[in-house]
Image 1 (cartoon, rainbow, N blue to C red):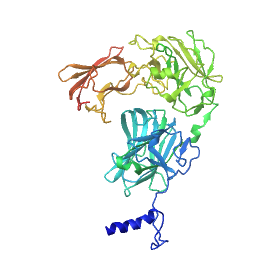
Image 2: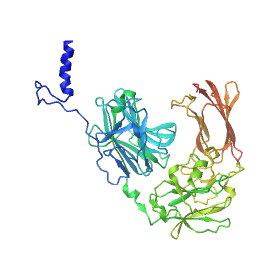
Image 3: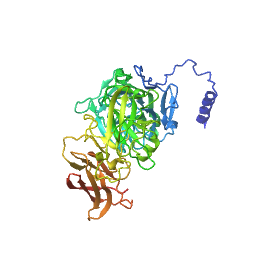
Image 4: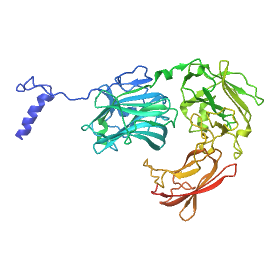
Length: 535
């Protein structure tokens, strides 16, 4: 009891802000140690920069209530729920450098990691999307940088660094990721305040990787996964996005040559209540101002109509970028849900295009940049109703009006690919092949092998397919695809549900894939696999 009274008599004056006379007034106390804020070396020419010194500004989207400002940086709210993310609009992908300052007060693990999203088609970074991100996680006293390509819920690691030994129980780094104009990726890091960015190498001694699967971005941001007790371990110091090579990004108003912009896809016979679209592709190393480009339709006899400006205001068109011209982007996105939403240009004065036979011309001043004349003969003979089926370019290297250069888009992808790579691509030097990504899958929504992936590739375009799933007793349980036109390379997925939309039991199943084309080629593939867990 005496001890309790003594403690109370000691604490009460302190709680009231009064120091007892017997406590020395000038006793020095060690300051609370805080790591200094990380900052970039140079922000000149940045397309985006935020060091959070003004807090979390309105341009950030996502879980904005999960992040709070502290010490001129961001940290997670103690009550935040994992995972937490924030994103900003950013269309940059090629010829871009992303840089971020990140600090973590404990070791990174398989469940405590951070991602830097470089390019995403969705602002919700925890939903299915297409794009690229860098994930930093760790195990056994080390941490690893992995560059991932994401397609929906499926992720593919395209680069993995050597394991780097932790320095104590903290992670502190400035991170830089670059993506060149020709699709080459590189990861650099300045860890623990060394002051110099060093390239990271894989176990094979490689410091870069080329991947140009996706030509566009949409959003960039941070994604943090954490244990409940570790929410406040993470601190975000800054995000910087800028051109990797600024001269390449200079908008060109003059000097546009034929072939710099190519007509890449045409939808002239839309679905009921639909609208036309024209997709163009920047095949040059220039950033072109589309304000100086005009478009005209061509009638069935080959005569061009009146020219219309693509844009009334300056509009940058980057190398290797796709743009979709239409009077109503909303309708196109409804009819083709996989469209790239950032590729659309609403063009109220877009010319009308004949459904079956006609054309389109692109002009820069008095120069014709590209032109296409289309006829019904370009469409697939297997498709009886061509409404809503676009014509896609096969080769950038061949003349636009080469008889074999435009074909029907694959019905398996919805009949059109507005704003992204065409379903019909140039023929590659390989033989026909059907293979499974994995011979087991477990549709339990844990993010790992949740779907069966049937991959295919053909030495030519124009193949059709029927895909059926049978159980080990030979009973047909799922008619997955029936007489669908295929791209020359792609993936068909199955979620483990029957024709009645019911989960199927664990067991061995067989996918029977029948392929054929207009030249009489026909082949049947049988691929067995295991459904490893119930839904």
